[in-house]
Amino acid sequence: MVKDYLLCYDIANEKRLYRTRKLSYPLSLGGQKSALHTPLSRSEAKKILTKLSKIIKKEEDKINIIEIDPEPLMLGRGLPLLFEDGAIII
Image (tube, rainbow, N blue to C red; front, side, top):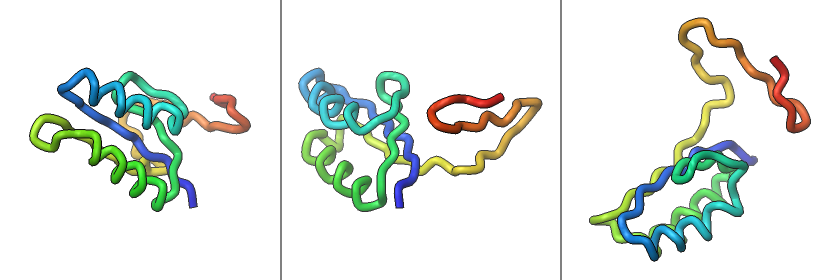
């Protein structure tokens, strides 16, 4: 089953950053530079984490893959946005 993940990374070295981007960007739906919305199955998430762990230096770099809750907690007066067929419905 495919779930939505937030793939976040902080890479200290330019070469490792390029390799991390090259591996992660094709899998993502979008995001901001080092925080990407990525739909993956659990096995795909493990595979990508294994590949990324071979690229990074653990003492200098950081990578997080966070599962996104399909029903997020809303605080304040925000309106829920529904996504259907690639469109946002308000």
